[in-house]
Image 1 (cartoon, rainbow, N blue to C red):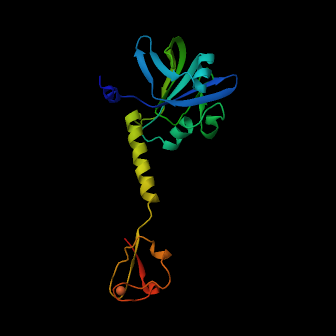
Image 2 (image 1 turned 90 degrees about the vertical axis):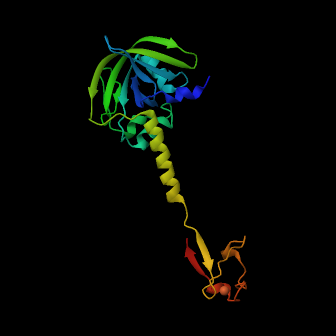
Image 3 (image 1 turned 180 degrees about the vertical axis):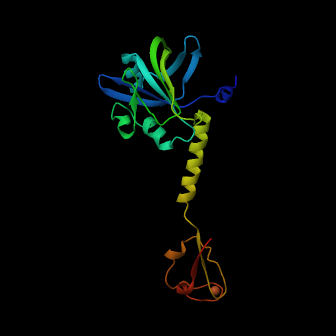
Amino acid sequence: MDVKALFKMTYGIFVAGTEYYGKLSGCVINTAVQVTATPERVAVTMMKANYTTQQIKQKGSLAVSILQEDVPLSLIESFGMRSSRDCDKFDDHVFKTDSFGNPYLPDTAAYLSLEIEHMLDLGTHYMFICAVKEAEVLSDAAPLSYAGYRARKAGAKQIKEKQEEKPKVQYVCPICHYVYDGDIPFEELPDDYICPICSQPKSVFTAQTI
Ligand code: FE
């Protein structure tokens, strides 16, 4: 079996949010999918160990924000890189609440308000089969796919690496154009270093950006 075939499946990317006894929690998920149309049902699968999962299980409902293609990566990171156990992730964002009091992000493609009807124990994960109680399109923006998110993340990493790349400098004798290429960095050479070709002192070498 080639498990890489599973990587060809398409997914969206969402923020699942819930409010339980006044405590807001949320996290990024890629495992929400519509399973029936009449009535409208959506399955959401989440890791048991995740704090938000436990809160959703207790509450019995959640709101799902469907992220748009141009969502700031920082938003995904702020919901994905830390636990709601330690902070209120919604503090940093504009949010609204559905009729269950569950938080969703209004600056996204759409949101769904979900009430859990069934729960499957999948060992490491729970699958919540939910009735769609409210739904609203919030913008014309296309939804972000999980593959699109990964591509954007890889692109952002490349740009960052490029920005952090230091320009390379070479030291050249201005008289004979000898380019220093020794193992010791030029700056660390003794002051009495001289050009091996024309014997000019170290002090006359010029730095050139390459
Ligand atoms: Fe020289």
